[in-house]
Length: 406
Image (cartoon, rainbow, N blue to C red; front, side, top):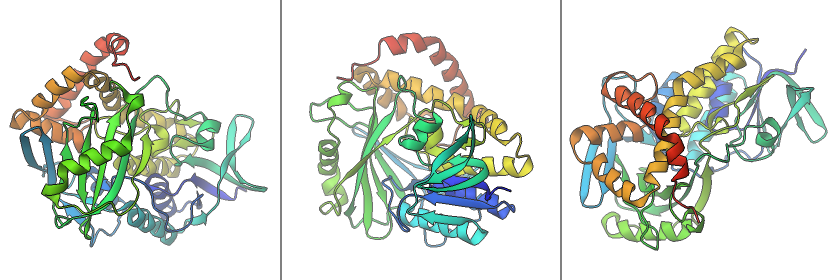
């Protein structure tokens, strides 16, 4: 008999969602988290309406969370404040919930559901031939029918399972800190789309102000690897440039902590195998257009648990198939589009189009809010599918003409 039905490596949103859903369904579940209880995770802290829907599906108590009613997009002199759309598949609000608080709340919910959590324990996949049969930590071994990798793209787990990002595909980098501001209770996420580096080069990415409602604002900047001069990009300098840009309007104080940077993988070489699957960031489920992945993390975690509870023998292959149908086209389109906007001239033109009129601004809102995927009906879904076909044809040219990184 195995020690657990499911072992989850990593206690972020993807891992916690997996554990909550599976444990509530009667599975014996363990989470192995290498950090200590209550750890912080560098992140933008923004939750899209899609993420809120996933948290509601998990029956997570959202009382006291700072709600966000829309997105403010800034491109040069153009500003548009857009409300999250209502009446669809997702709620009409998002939120800002710091990762320290969000992750702690989710892990507490996992414990209440019956999952066992091992903190300060670095677990690695344990193999029997090509099949993963559990995990090891030091001299200790635990067995499981399914191991779920929820530990992100880099690191030992990714190398052992082969889930590392595809090196020939785009990825993102980001940096964030916190500042005090009298606008900490603002109900809009703010995204400055027309960012430039210290040399004046346009950046395919954006600067953000995500108000937490607790006296502080999450301030950060992200960029795609497809930009000209990417390898010379200094994120700390870029963060300072952005802070200076918004300092007067937001009346910000000094950084409350040293800005912290991280990578955003947007692909995975594979996301399942014998006895295991990868979820969330470990599966490359990050929107190339905004760097957001919490909602996909929650959804992928719940999906594998549901499939396992239905039929453990087919869960891994069904998971890979459904994730592919649901997300691969949209994420692939985003990565291909990132090659286009890596060129400064195309980026500048694209920004003008993105906020040029209400229709295009609404399209941009849906993309930035993770509100579209391959199954989305209506105009947004049609535009996505047309773009996917067009960019597929142009893909060889896009790769050959990509902006030089150095």
